[in-house]
Image (cartoon, rainbow, N blue to C red):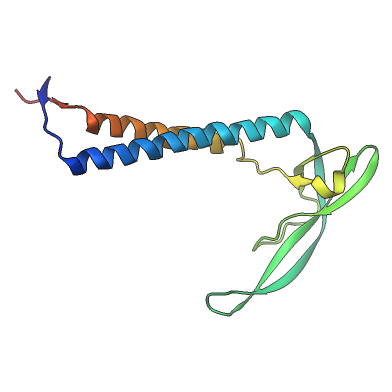
Length: 152
């Protein structure tokens, strides 16, 4: 196990530099997303809501001009001591009535700011850190003028 000199071509250096830039962008994006989630957690109220109904709509696909039915849950939660309802995002599936969800909202404007919290929301920054970190490590490895070798 030793290090041997390695001559990199311009294409190798260019690809490694692009990979390094992309990796750093992913790491920066991870910090940005983490700050948004942290800010929302600190400034918005979080409570449990219940799906009480669902509404549907038909949309035409722009690619194949087929109709597709989508559903949005109607969610009820307690905000400032009052029962409040809002409509969630349209999805391809229907949420069953009675399903409990976590709702995040601004106490000053609960109806207009309420949204369902995605349970995997906290993992997004860590995924970005991981992908960015791997890209940085591999890119720096490609830029080094030496390579590790196990042969003599």
